[in-house]
Amino acid sequence: MAEPYGGKHSPGAAKHPRDPSAIRRSRAGARVNFLFVAPVAMLLVAFQMEPLGMFVKLAAFGVMMLAAWLTREGLRAEDAFEARRVARRPAIPRKLFGSVLTGLGLALAGLDTATFGLLNPVLFFILGAVLHFIAFGPDPMKDKGTEGMNEYQTDRVARAVDEAERHLAAMKDAIRRAEVPALDRRVATFADTARSMFRVVEEDPSDLTSARRYLGVYLLGARDATVQFADLYARSKNEDARRDYETLLDDLETSFTQKTEKLLKNDKSMLDVEIEVLRERLQREGIRSDI
Image 1 (cartoon, helix red, strand yellow):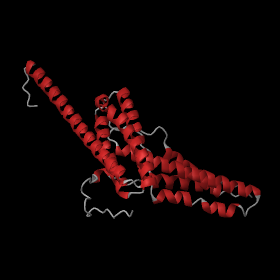
Image 2 (image 1 turned 90 degrees about the vertical axis):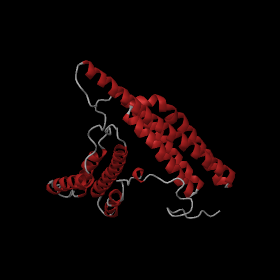
Image 3 (image 1 turned 90 degrees about the horizontal axis):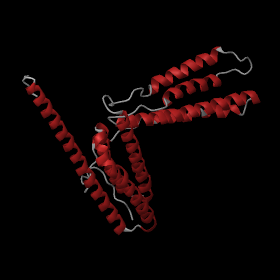
Image 4 (image 1 turned 60 degrees about the horizontal axis):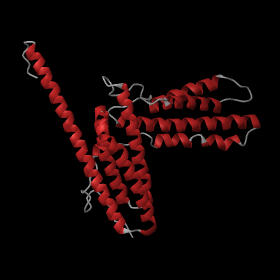
């Protein structure tokens, strides 16, 4: 069955609009792809050289491919870091290692195996490492939004959110097997709704106890349902199953939205209590407060 085009002006497109603020352009784009393509030039010349020269060129190819992979993973880690209001810095500075390895790969590529002169390799190392660092920047080196928070609580939240993100990623991968673009967009919209709850919990780790069932049990169930539906629909194109699955997503999205709003209201109530307590203390001290 053909799937109609679903643009933003198409009928029904506004039923589950995605929040534009939730759509982020990944940093791992064409520049990173170029890092994987550029080292191929060394393969073209490696097998035309003597054994030692071939070994050096192949080593340079391997080092630069590793640098490209580390750079891509570093950019993905930075995307995840920037997407969160409260986040720990990446444990491994992948982009920094990528800069060093890029310089090392170029140094090996510029090494003359006849003379083993060091001037060109050193210049290539400095040039490659510096240009890579300028192009891709440093890794996040400091935690974000954790000032004044209990480290144990923030670690618990980080682990819970990481697990929830894995469930969302599994849903995204599974629904592709159904080969229905509208469902891809529908799952992405639900993921945006779920991430709104993640951000609330990250800002106030005390909300984790109340939200853990949503981040764990409900998303795990949604993942399993998505996998089963995608496999069934890929085989049979069962429209009843599709309607049931879309209804499930609607119910989940409504539940997540309501819970997120409740968490925000609870946070506001706690703030009101803190303000009232502070006002009473100031009044007892004989200080007039306009808080």
